[in-house]
Image (tube, rainbow, N blue to C red; front, side, top):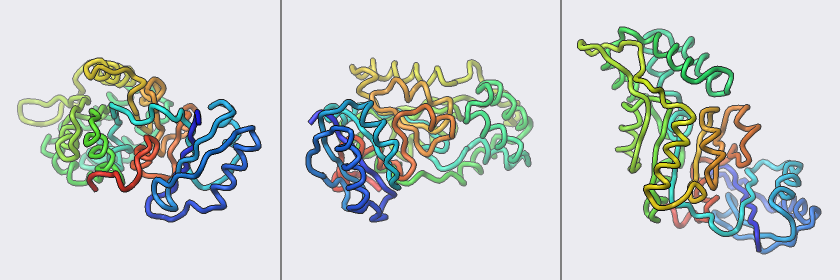
Length: 298
């Protein structure tokens, strides 16, 4: 079989029903596909269905019309398990936006969050948006970074994603348009091999200057990091799985072998081919062919 369809629902929901699978397979058959067996990755939660006879594009087009409450992802049946994970941090590996939480201590969270939302949807220039938001924090004690860190929560499945891929020999990188104070903490706690992010500048009295060290790490920096890390590990971008939710993740997602828009902003949803809107981050393991009994961590 040339291709595989992976169906994924919310974790531990038992929501992937025989009727949903039947709708998906009927849709593929109507498009001219010849199907293999259903292989459960997690009972009633995620499964693979191998098929042949139609192209990936034809399968995507057909499945767009298949209205079921599950993520539907078609890939080549070979080469699914990747050797490099490159992940965004805010609203991907962690549930919120760390800059917005930091802004709360300066009493400007609403203003900063509004700018963040527009920037992540691609409505604003990323560098201009980060400069404007950080400017609102000028004079804040850098100790507030520790207070903001206390509010950080990990997205469901983040630990399993990193631990399982590393246990299977993959390199795990966290590359963020946020700040290195937070990425370094996430790296230590979750076991990432590498992190990269922007740097907040401080005065001698340990207050924030309201400026970010230049150059700002933007969407191109994420692409550069993917290509650099792939080269360092003796692989190509096709051997990577990349995940993010914002407009500054789109280029990284587009060049990775498996590029995933994870509960992403509307503009990102429109442009990314692989979208996860039902599953948690363990969906990225299912996409690579891992079954729940193979997960590490949690």
